[in-house]
Image (cartoon, rainbow, N blue to C red; front, side):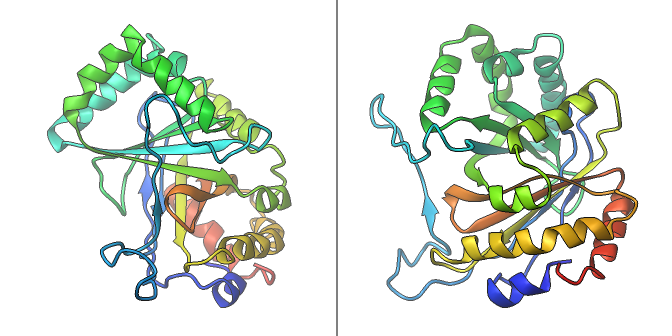
Length: 287
């Protein structure tokens, strides 16, 4: 279901997969996840360490300081934290997380930018859970996490769940505002919050979410070029979905972590509906 024009003009690695997820019961509004990922393109010899299959940006603490590259006036940044559970502890972790999001509200209270919680259903590691957070900039992220480290309630939650987690990964993404605006999403954060609220209050079933990740070629041009192509093609894709089954939640690109990644997050009422929307999109000329 990839658009033809981006494939021609914005080289994307040809190997992709699609992961679908069911909601973690009663955990949060954005409650299901699906993911697609591409393998990296090999870099020219000598461009970076031979052991690295793609460029990667990491930010590290140096005392209390933190390098901030996102301005406070920007649409903000989104942190995706992916945890892989020890299989025998997966259900216990979800039970504890349910308490933290519900009765005790530890997670929501500690993280005002909390947006969603997903569990992988198929197409990926079924022991994987993913959290999504919004921050105004990197300075706010540091301040929030500094406060969390000194919060006794959060410390209790972290101590209880840490032994259940086999690995943790943190990546930062910036919103693809041009592409989102073309799809009628002018305020990405407010749009995500409304989707979360609709599910949290029981206005609708949280459904199924698909997170598609494209690993683009190296360089500065592929991401802007793909965003332009997405902005051109998205309106026709949305029109092709006559029943309105698919809803674009968010689009963005990596800022810290594996660089030159582009991601789409879509919601569907069911697994089969996501196939129906993709099939309909094949008839959208601009897409």
